[in-house]
Amino acid sequence: MKNKLTFLFDGGCPLCLRETNFLKKRDLLNKISFVDINSKDYYQNLFKDISYSEAMSNLHGIMENGEIIRGLDVLAYSYELIGLGWVYYPLKIKLLSPLLRLVYRYWAKYRLQITGRSNIGKLCTSKCEQ
Image (cartoon, rainbow, N blue to C red; front, side, top):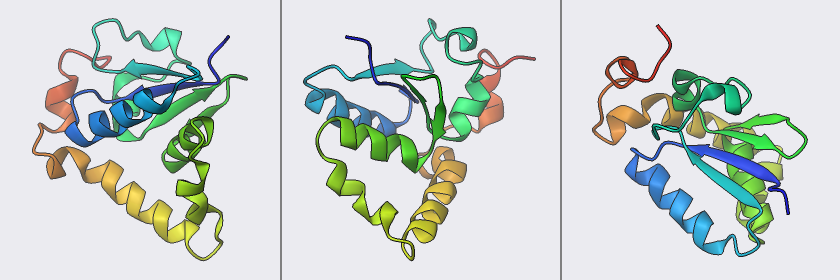
């Protein structure tokens, strides 16, 4: 069976890794392919040309039909695939969705600082295109 989603994650981020491991354990039907963008085997040309720096700036997923989804939409779809879609039901509520997306954008922008990691410039020295 072909995966329904390719989930690009930052394996160097402790919170991202925790979320990814949670999803992996519950993906009993292997609907999701998990790809660590920090792996030496990550080549952007294999993943819709999503560069390392782009992938580090926001969560990315590639759906079975080739469509790229980002941020909370990746998490919501992942949870739907593992049978826990109800967890992200608040994203469907018109008044809550913009607030949740704003909070996520803040998290994505500052997650390296929040988790005590180097800035994207330092992380990019060996991974990003020059």
